[in-house]
Length: 283
Image (cartoon, rainbow, N blue to C red; front, side):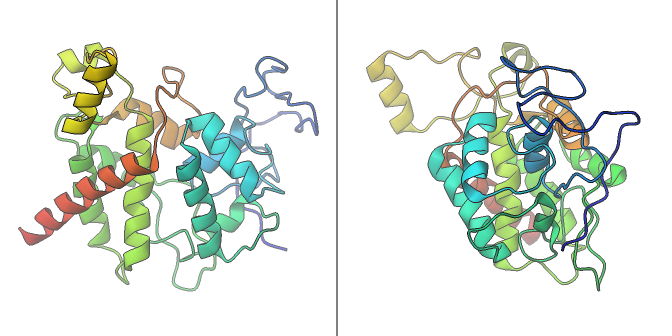
C-alpha cells in the first residue's frame, strides 16, 4: 500500500462521520453538507489545493480515499463550476499521466513525482532526487515570492503569473518537459479564471476588466446583455483570495463560482501566460 501523506491535524477533533455528509467539526449537515473541516490523522491529501479543498468541504470523500474519475468530474463541476468538458479533460488526462487506470485511488497518489506532479511548483519544494513522492505542504517563502511578482499588488494577472513561472522554471533541474510545462500553466490559468469574480471596488482601484473578443461583444449586444464592472470578470484574481485558498485549502468566504470556467477560456489564458513567458525569456 502507498504511504500516507503527512497532514495537518487539529487537536481533539472527532473522527470523520462515515456516512451522512456531516462535518465532525462544525456539525453542519443536511442543507450544508459542504461545511469545511480540516484533514485529520490518516487522511490522504495531494499537492493540489483544488483536490484537497474539495475533500475538506466534502465534495470528495473527506478522508481522500477510494476516489475515482467520475467523483472528481462531478466535484469539479459542483465545487468550482468547471464545465463538464474541462472537468473531464483534467481528470482523465491526469489519470492517464498517473497510469492509474479506471479503479479507485487516494489523493496522495497524485504526489507521485514526475507523473502529474512536477518540479517548479509555484509554492511547493521540488521532490528530492531519489524521492518517489513530492512534498504536499507548501513553502511559505515560495508563496510570498508568488505574490511579489504582481506589479499591482492587488490581483494576479496571466502576465504576472508568467513572471513567476519564468523565475521558478529557471531553477528547475532538470528543466520541465513540454507536458509538465503546459500542466503548470494550465493549473494556474484555471485558478485565475475561477477566482476572477466581478468587483466594482477593485475595478475602481485600477484593476482592468477581462477582455472580451469581438464575437463575444457582438453576441452580448444581440441578446441584450450589458457589460459593467458588476457583471464582467476582472482580468486577474485577487491576491488575498488566492493566498487564503493556497494556505488553508479552504473555499474563500468572499467567493462563489460566478461563471462556468470552460476549456476554451483556459486555453486562452494559458496562451497569454505562454506568450508572456516567451517574451520574458527573450529579454
